[in-house]
Image (cartoon, rainbow, N blue to C red; front, side):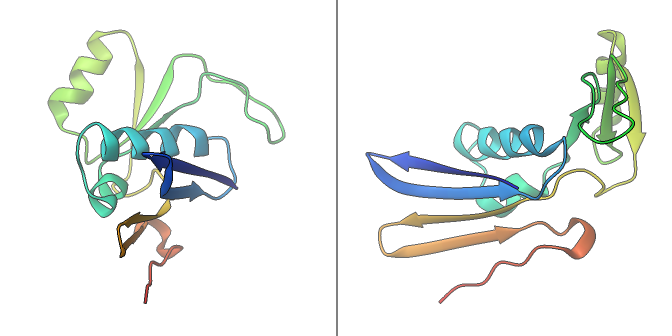
Length: 128
């Protein structure tokens, strides 16, 4: 499990995480950048098409590596996939909603927000 906490003006603002696996650091970074820099709300940032690189050795047996391979969801625009290939990436297109496992919660004043991943029907967001 990878979990993270972001502060805003020195106060806790955002907590998010992903269950175990080698792609969790890639998926959590995508989420954070979409939310903070692209201005997406929590659910939009989780729902956006995701991807991962298989360039480095995986931590699970048999510890294979696939240098240059980028696995993307089929929901990425075809023009984006074409451009990635033109830049030299070995792009594998996976099924829609196949990449990313994330949950997030944020606080803005007295308001709470939460979002969960629809992929794999594994995450839920609830609040009071």
